[in-house]
Length: 314
Image 1 (cartoon, rainbow, N blue to C red):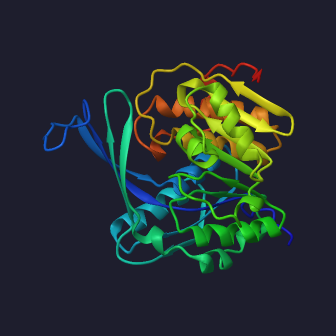
Image 2 (image 1 turned 90 degrees about the vertical axis):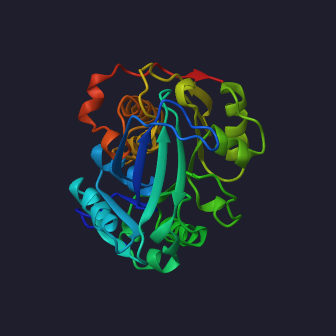
Image 3 (image 1 turned 135 degrees about the vertical axis):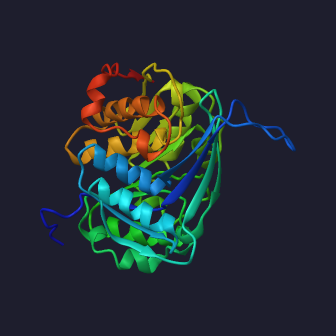
């Protein structure tokens, strides 16, 4: 199918949540009441965050998902539209939108409790009803919506010749039928360990996990290691990119910023490694700010940061 010039290059099929963020000095113990530093509401959800990250890096983006009939639903759609994202395929289902309660401590680490809400009602029919999937160059998936819906979206995109990028977060079992459809797998240490069946606690073990994941079918496996950088494995081999050193304030949406910048760079014609470098810079800027979507940087803001060093081959 021919893609109209103004159609989305990247379609994100996934979740939209309203994040309720509480900042605390430390995580309270069981039964303890702890005075917090502050509270904020912020549009989020892995799908929506990654759509925003792609759009702020200059890509044309469409979102496929579900929100509730509450006030959060309208706010979530409006937030995406404000970043120029096509929300024609963001439907309404049920009374409640997805909600994430996020506790961020003074060490910038977050702990998240997720209520799926309308996200749980996204189904295969939503993929069939989204024409942009058939004309996109890249489809981006996560695991905050039902797997049957993800599988159908992947089937449609793969059948149309698009690259399917999967970020299996939160980590879950992936059906055998999905693996052959995935072109690029992006995981963190926890997800890599669960899917590869091996411990991941440093660059060497991340490389071993990435090689094992390649054998499941993807052409590229990317393992993000937070402050320890990124490991990439593909048919060229395995290499490690060092992270940029920044003062972390909040790690929420850092992975989403990396993935969105990587995807936008790839559809713009950059190589895998150049796209990884852009993703690292986007994540570094994200963690220096509080919040989810509000912390995701634009392409122009990346000029504030130094270049990423060339990778070390493993």
